[in-house]
Length: 203
Image 1 (tube, one colour):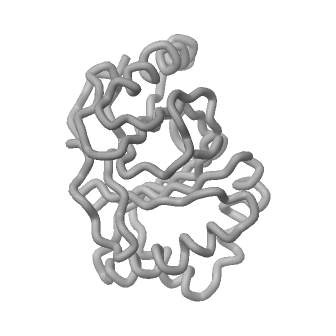
Image 2: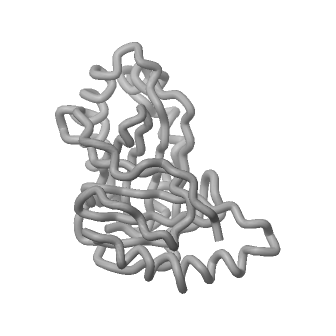
């Protein structure tokens, strides 16, 4: 998997979700994958109407030249018509700091957690990511990889992303998930949510 990830979390307005998903899977993802530097892409649903789109690259410059804002100015007519169906959009370009496991394939299940430590707690939070949370993620059944990332663009100070082959409970060592979902197939149908979005204590 990539060393940098462009994430887009959102819901849909419900006006024509099937048309949006058909466009996203049939046109938008292939168009992005064809751009120089893009190495993979995936789309996830959590079973409650929330979606997570991921685009990967080996170098963060792929998502900064051109940047998401610059790409928006170049959208074709279909994209300009479809993107406004998104609601509650939160987008980030994340650079990987550390990881555990293999990054060779797109996972079936993804879990993303945003941690917002106070400035005085940044040291402790970063250390916890590397010393506790990455090793704990490796103990989750069907675990594939876990990555500690920081935003170059977007929300969150520290981001933990975990990947696995099938739904299963997260480790009790991990903070509250911001998004947990299962990859959507090319027909736009979602599998059951990966994990319930239950409250957990942050470190």
